[in-house]
Length: 323
Image (cartoon, rainbow, N blue to C red):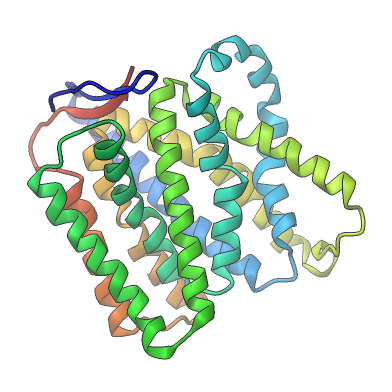
């Protein structure tokens, strides 16, 4: 993809050749599949926490404070490198994958089924990424992107149509919050790629500042109505493991590894399978109905993401954002 001039401080999309052996690509597929499973589990964990006595504050403490403790020393050691990143990208990572993103997702999950949440967040994010790339980075808007993003837009409309037909104001609120979370995730994606930080460094800059904010907030509000005492220890440990370790640390490493082996296009296409797996698991675990509009919305969104990713079943260069 040809590069064009951009405003000062902003970088261009640049195509870098991807040279990997068959075995390396196989390991990339394994990492991508692991990412899909983790993200599906993440949405189910949010849904489970919405149905449990645990508050959003408690879940957010699991999500950020636990990995922050583990990564605090790394942040200190790599401080000079991390602070060398342009501040808009640091802010984009801290907010895009931090508390604003998490709160939008967690609160929306109490109003909206897993099938819609797991589709709107990872499914619509490519739309926002492309919009930012075209409007801010002045990238060309190719035909395949237009077709793919149109399919995504149709999928979103189908998901929203169910709420319109049922006049469910709560579902509309949840869907709007999921779209906000998707925009934040797109900002994080662009910022993380532009930063050139390693996956662990990226996780540190996300979790440590947000973890400190949560600790300070909790200290200033000691009278919070905690629900942990009303939850079985096994369920509590499950949330801590999923939010703090699996999502907080493992997911970002797996996805970054998949991109290095498969390229961003194919990794994104595989990531669009998240709503499929999450919906099937939600049907099995929470008995959530998959009505026809939701099913067609999921299918249209997944197809749109695959097309918009530009993936072709042949060797192609990997898409990276680089200064």
